[in-house]
Length: 346
Image (cartoon, rainbow, N blue to C red; front, side, top):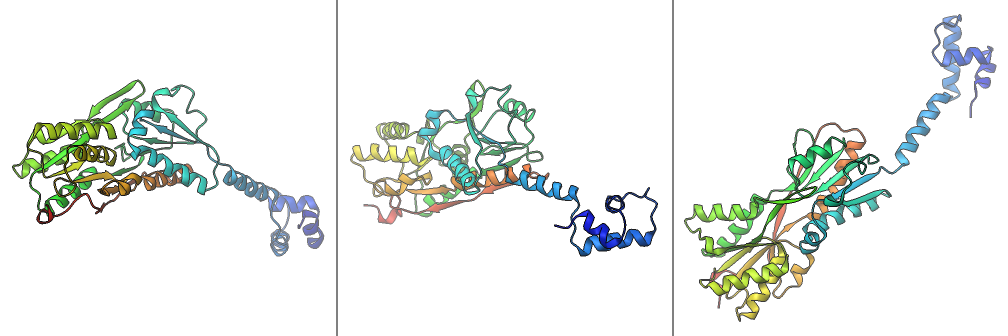
């Protein structure tokens, strides 16, 4: 490694003079020719100033250190177990974190968070699920870098990743109509907005989109809409209610695959066949959807990718990106055995 002494020897000046020239000290009484000669020799010998080496070392250290990131899950443990939509997002975050070789990831439940001290040591935060405006304000007052997943945060301030539920529901309804069905039913759960002390039921765009499309076609019947909780058990219970009340729809759009699998059992127990008696389409494309009997037609949501994208966005913000970004993850129709055209029904 080239030293100041090496440069001083070639330039035939003192080490002090070399140091002052390389540190851009214009108070030094030295000719321009001597100053330029020192700079030329330093360049020729590939000399790197000590402060530049320290800066490079600091940058390398900062780059190698893993940022401390928190993941806040708005849902309770029961909600997450009943609806794999949210646990799959979290899985995507964890997979991307491991893929990048990072090591400091903390996961919290919103309702068990210590609002005062919890966020002070975090470099960034990923929030999964819908939270109240007041909760958003409390979090953002303590944290600069936040990414919201499946929540419509202020797009002028924060990065967010979500699904266009209206477009996804339209895709399911249009598909059922393309098969020739006109009498459609809906089974779904309650969408909730969460805060530190609890939650409140809010609009579910799957349900409201279904109602709007039925109303537009003049076929809206509230008796064909059954709402409970997003769980397999509730799907089973609500389908039994639909069967019991009679005039069962020809096909159902069901707000989650878990509910759809529960609904399938209720139909089987009633001696009804899928899809010859009743067709159905689910939502999410969880792993069990392809193993149900029959395999479930569904609208696939790329939940793991939502988590991966959320982490990538957060790391970009921590590294200095200022412009907030909104990412809308697309959905895809997956055709399986739980649906068939009306002319193929038994």
